[in-house]
Image (tube, rainbow, N blue to C red; front, side, top):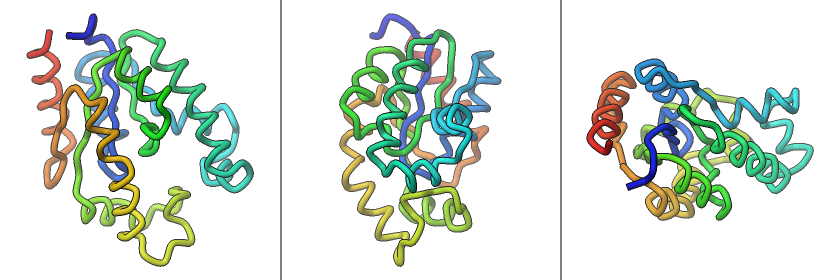
Length: 175
């Protein structure tokens, strides 16, 4: 087992509920909450869509690596990551070695429903078939999520509060 359950890192595809569940989890466990995408936006003074437009996905991923290195170095946090965080081997190594990784598993249908009206998802902008895009992203990333996950939690048709309670039970069971 890892040396500590001080840090909990949430991974999974967009629309899995990482931010919502992360906030509840942090509140329940009295930990600080961070969202890596929000941290990037706050420091750049621009939203992620703009960063993608100006620097491309590659530029965004470099920024993301720096933020992940910094945030995973903190103690007693819950971190909600962006859906593509697992693309980087460095990110996967840091997440896996510095905390407990929870993979929030969701269906493509749930992702489509939750991202349908969200205009801040650069990988879904100007896409004719969002469902096909989400399916393609999942095919690329699912094995990476599984590779670093200490626990997998199904989110489908469950409230964020219910999921948060399940994670707390998993964490306390691992101590």
